[in-house]
Length: 199
Image (cartoon, rainbow, N blue to C red; front, side, top):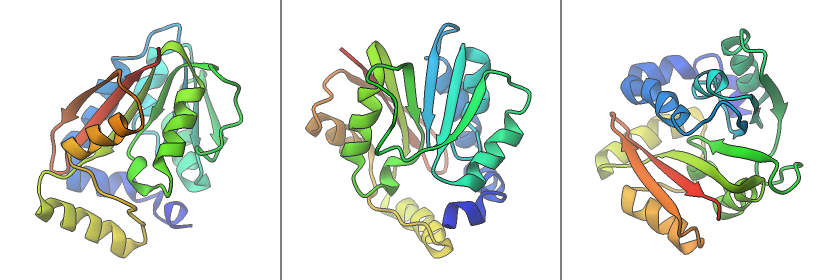
């Protein structure tokens, strides 16, 4: 699996190419987390966001489909007793409806065959009044889009789609998530963060 193969080098690549954004994302997402929250994180990758969420919440289940990525998260979060790791397919979550206070899925929507189904699952397991937080890399220009997608693509990743801020907003509006706010974390490859409040 591609993500297993690159798991040991992923942080290095991100820090070199998009370090400012990569370091800021977890800090910003953690602002939405409360001390009493039980959090589900899907596509946790190497734990770049997880390590910021763990000290902010009661407990977090960090999941990924890649065993290699989970191994990296485990190393990064070894000092947190409230982190549990699980190998999970985020399009078919095994938890009951409304199991979590906050649900996070970072930089994965553009890689999925059916991102609408994935968001539906994230929303399903979030409690009413909770939040689903979905950061995704966006393109400021066709040049930046082509460069990043080209590099990752040559390594073996499969980008299913690319978003700019407006198309990212349309994606959630079309799927029926009216109560969604957005903010952007700037960087070489900016990241748009969608925050859905579950009614």
